[in-house]
Amino acid sequence: MTKVYNFSAGPAVLPAPVIKQVQAELPSYHGSGMSILEMSHRSSLYEELAAAAEANLRDLMKIPDDYDVLFLQGGGTLQFTMAPLNLARHYHRIGVVDSGHWAVRAKEEAELLPKMTAEVVATNQEQNYAALPSAYHLSGDYDYIHLTLNNTIEGTMYRQLPQLDGQVLVGDMSSNILAQRYRVADFGMIYAGAQKNIGPAGLTVVIVRHDLLDEKQKLPAMLDYVKQAKKKSALNTPPVFAIYVAGLVFQWVQDQGGVDAMQQRNEEKAQLLYDFLDNSKLFHPTAKASDRSTTNVPFVTGDAQLDQQFIQAATAAGLLNLKGHRSVGGMRASLYNAMPEAGVEALVNFMKQFELEH
Ligand SMILES: Cc1ncc(COP(=O)(O)O)c(C=O)c1O
Image (cartoon, rainbow, N blue to C red; front, side, top):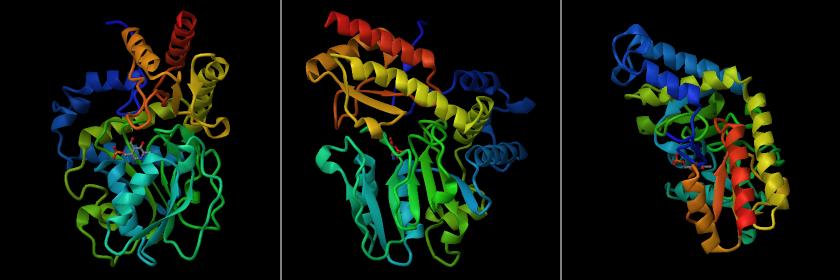
């Protein structure tokens, strides 16, 4: 098979050594004679792997002890509901930093809850979200402020957190968890769907400060962080395979030198592509330079037909999934942790050639 590079925004490329290990271990996990796909979540083998995955994640992100780490299902999207349900208990009011499509979705879902208000405290919609919002308007009491750390579709990312008067922050890190260093203690809660930097879809990581939770609150069990934490995320059958692969990816990130090393590599990879885009006469990056993401790089030629032609030619050359999100069009290259530098070099070389020919 010819070499391909997968620039998908998610589910996304996984580290090649992880895929190899999964393949090798699939028929019999750790000499058990059973595949991990067949393994009970009550077995000691599973309990060990889940505990090791959590310990590795805690170490990688330097998660303080007073935070619970949960391995849940329902994607990033279910957290748009679970976060307000569990955390917006006092004022039933949250603030949302409207930095793009996923922030809007977080607001919409929160507002569907009875008696819940979700208020935009900053927006950059009028600039089509090409930059992060710059003005924040907080008024009165909020249970928390929701912030999307990396806007997967629009290609903007927070390098520094906005100053929000000591408000509790809930951070959606779906597309840059483990790719960029953040201080967990700056957040009341963090969540991320796994299918970009962590592993297979079907797993969502939640990191929540324990004192924000209320043991007495009565919520449906699956939606309750307290009950999930008490049962070590095995209240019902957890996504065993996805947690297993996530554990392997956490170990791979450790082997690469951890989150700081990943961030450094991601900055170098993104720089390679942005340097080309900034000097190209054909291709243009769409996000403002100071705010642009290291993990998702949207760009256009300005001619929708030519964009289409480029995507087709790139696909034929083994550079896959470069089509931009359906809501914005153009192209998008996602450069998650597992995308090797060689993939970005191959993309830039291909773009140079395409530019010459067009
Ligand atoms: C930043 C962000 N938040 C939330 C989501 C929704 O995630 P899921 O599909 O896991 O529900 C995505 C999906 O791409 C995302 O990029």
